Length: 112
Image (cartoon, helix red, strand yellow):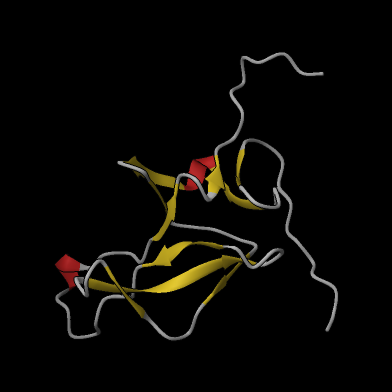
């Protein structure tokens, strides 16, 4: 086994709630609805090759885990089928639960 090399960025970032590794930039947040964060670009994650069924087999997705601590963060929506019409293309998104990914701290807090 080799050493894990992590990508680090400056600025406000979302982190793994378990080990505090940076997962996504706040500018890559696509949507925050209900109890989920939806990103279009993430880093320091592992994506499972085999899709898993979610919510009583309503849809499938690839599990996404933190590369440092292997904690399950959420899932990645599968890519659209190749025979889908060009106007209906949906970019695969990464969906993470609020408790598994920590948001960046607010800018108005005093820094120590």
